[in-house]
Image (cartoon, rainbow, N blue to C red; front, side, top):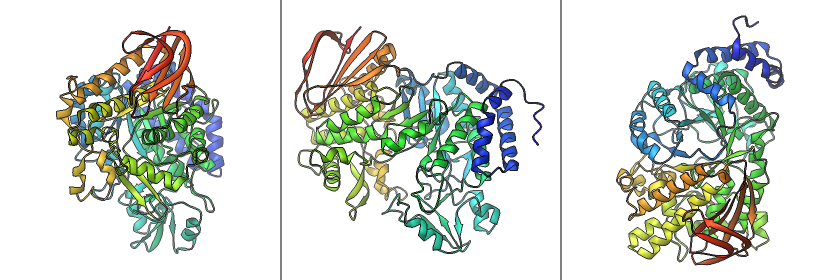
Length: 615
């Protein structure tokens, strides 16, 4: 049995608060394997003891104010370390710039050790306790986190928990024939069971990495590889996997990581005869991880990467009594935004907003215009069907428009994982290039540039209007365009997602305070949005939010109210001037200009918006 005689103080009280549920869930999932459970609990205490005192102090402050991330003060930025500043020390040297951007939530994309050419952008981890050497060391990561904390910046890092690289120590031992390590993955002597899985399990990358299994020549066995052949799925039915991966997660937390992004979390439990997605056991694992954090490092947040339709996403919040993730991505809204840019019709986006507004206010989403990945068209086609839209031709239109193939389109995106057989493809591109800034610059068209910049600003205003945490993709704040040079790099050429993962353009960044430039106009607008959002309670996550009827299918209207403050936000997705027929009898002030106005028939320029405020 575990010797708990030295357990005292906050660890003992936190553990006692969760002990009954944690033990019950663990024993139910792992068939009352008490040896594994005792090892697990002992590991939690070791992790707590190893946690630096500065992080324990931050834990206590956040424990006293558990909703610290739910207000209207946080603004995020997502970046690849190498693309932004070369190394972790380089990022540390750029903290003044990050602060100038108004950012206090910094998401560092995968930076742990992974093999070159077989990393999927860092998502094939070969060592969860080492930083990729060219980026720095774990000490550099800890030092950067400390500097961020001194500035009030929280740090987020991906935790790739579904799989390891085939170069991971466990995988090497499994390949060499060690049965203990083969049990950490899914190994089969023949293709019989893998073929049974294939009957029900969808393919993630049907064109670039078809199938869910790969033959391992060294082991003379078949191994499960849901994503790419070099990413071996972990078997969470083995308690050793859960114990050791949780230990790895806590190691990252103890190196200053405030937000753990649970990568591909819906995939982590596998069962024959199912899709191996969103199984009940996944929620048991996430619930246990939430309790682990509340015991060892309660200042830490769990961010779930659930890139699926809303009915699949929301359950990962858990319940009020038994919460799971603190934060989830507002992925369907992101896809619906670009659908609306392409169609100029706000009805689908309004339908999506209505679903979001109906959720409990304690649910906190990350809102974003784009991420490191592609834009997939997981839209509500049943809803679109009532307007005569069919899924395959509609997806083709969206992709044609946003890649500039549709007549009159200003967008310059590219397709990713195009599957002509299914009539499906995903989309890549920076926000600026999708809005038309790149094309306007190439064409030397001043009018088109004005429209494109206005659209880009409007989309950011929409993101800042939503409850939750707005996250900028690094470079978007200065209208960074597509990196069309990615094709010349043999390690990137086959993956069009690198189109929008280009190196930070520091020449553009130098123009950020010159409002006669495109870069300066966009940067100033985003800074203004951040300041207004921080200053006004109407943007708080506790605010009431509802749809406004604008009487115009080109204009989205959102109302917000909190503690005496009211906001009417209007967004024109058309490329022509539109009128929003709000017909509100009260007087308002334009929140950006201070000018008094009514809210009856509100004129909006092409791609324009208005924030009408009342207190």
